Length: 202
Image (cartoon, rainbow, N blue to C red; front, side):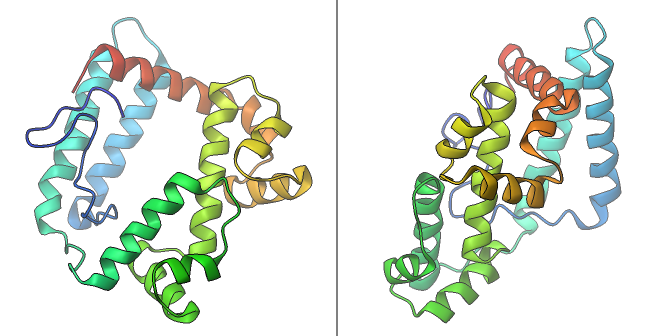
């Protein structure tokens, strides 16, 4: 996200690295859902001068996130948790490479079963599923922001087997990479929101 400048935070940082990125909106769930629907509806309408409206909606959403953060249970500052956070950061920077749970567990100085259990407990997904989701998320970004071929995208995110990539993408995205790229909704929303944030810093 560009254009975010919060007091006491580096540019572009919404929450501190040690803060859990999973935020439970609780009683605000209905309001948050309505705001997201309104945001997407305004982006889709693509009317002249409606960028300020979508920008204001986005500001409200971010304000609600910041309001909820003090109520969230922070990750305990134990050595084990610090190692797991460091491991997740490592995955985020190397998910396109060949990673195994065994090597990640060794990196975290934990047993295989203990690592897998604790990783899911803290981050919500087993390590392998987290890696796949990071890869598919990057593939989605590349598909609607570049003109790379689907084969090139597959290789970029760590899949040498195009058939396996197609299967994994469809499993997590609900459609094939080709159909995803053809979808005007995703590409249109991304371009409009990106333009919005560039022209109206938060």
